[in-house]
Amino acid sequence: MTTPDPIDAHRIDGAELLDEVAATITRYVVLPSDAALTAVVLWIAATHAVPAWNCAPRLVIRAPEKRCGKSRLLDMADGMVHRPLMTTNASPSAVYRSIGLTPSDPPTLLIDEADTIFGPKAGDNEDLRGLLNAGHQRGRPTLRYDAGSRSVERIETFAMAALAGIGTMPDTIEDRAAVIRMRRRAAGETVQPYRVRRDGPVLADLRDRLHAWVTAHLDELTSAAPSMPLEDRAADTWEPLIALADLAGGDWPQAARQAALTLLAELQDSTEVSLSVRLLSDCRTAFGAASALPSTVLVQRLRADEESPWQEGPGVGGLTVRRLAALLREFDITPKNHRWEDGTQSKGYTRDDFTDAWARYCPEPAEIGSSQPTVANRPNRPNAGHAGDGSVLRDGSNRPNDPSVPALTWAGTVGTDGTDHPPKPAQPTCIRCRRPLSEDDGSHTHPNCA
Image (tube, rainbow, N blue to C red; front, side):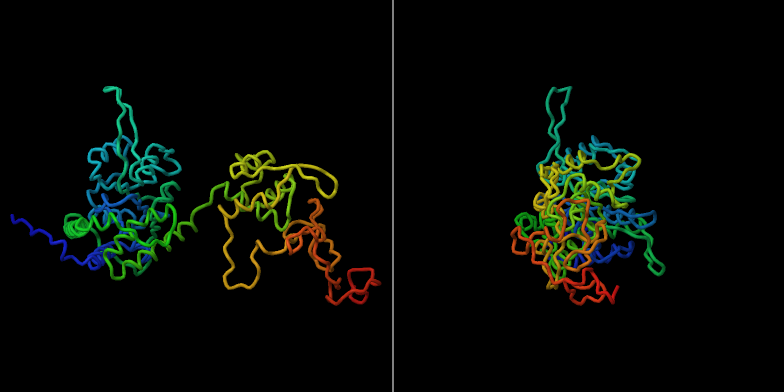
């Protein structure tokens, strides 16, 4: 049996090698987009440069149903990543030991059928989820007490990991991952069947060349500081992939950055916001244009939305004034005593109480290409979307007053100059023909328009 010739890493064209990996994957799997293919190829290559990374990005391969190609895509990764460790189930202690045996050269964890571990019927599995979360960043070991030696054992957790399953993974894992949303092949989309004995050597050859090319540039990758189109944890996750794309050159640098933006946008569109952030967003809608609302009125408006989670129902109990205060307290928003224009006094909230939290957790998208003022600069006017008494205001407009909210009238709104002086009423007009009314008309319509 002849020994294969050693690979000359310096003669490898990185862009061509990544192109070859991409072409091989698409021979056996139909991916949902070019962005998804780019992310998978770069993630596979990144497993060969673990010593260079500060963060080990996760790869989440999820599908809405069976037969969407997620397991086959994981087979592709199994054939080309560095030191693959494939499993369909694993105890946290087994994973800890697998990584801890060789912390300087950890295996690449490949977890298939992850929905049986993290799915709705699988329990919390908090230990394994905590391990995968901690292992995303270098220097986050776990500590275990060894009763036999009466000592504390430090076990490393840093390793690359991919998970494939039906449905979403825990949000803390997807927040650290490039998420690939697979779909079933359509009519006309064909792939070749994959057989390990026949096709495995092709993947093994790519794996060896990837390893030779990447490890020859470890110093360069370790010191890389690529320009990132993302921020915060998303930037940490995508930095190794973009650094490899920059090293490869060709079309890969641009494709990697576009893939990062595309997949992150898809993830945000498909991710249900937390209950607390939903509450902040719903409070903004409930406020409308009011500058202040009593707590009871704010709760009434929140519960008036039939599609909101704030109504009464099994296991919900409905939103109360006390529960509202408890949820908002996490954002440093607390009710204060207010005296309303009708002379009553009660606890309530002002729009200013929410301004900072709205800007941080649920900012409104900017109005691109519009000459209209932004929400923050618009006059504070009553919102016609809330229930009112149907009356017409003295300026002739059809903006309704809301009798349930003290001081919520057009005459009591804040002026556009930022003072508490109300805007000057406009000339009253007929609500039917919109022509000016005279003081003698004594009605909101002209006699001949009634």
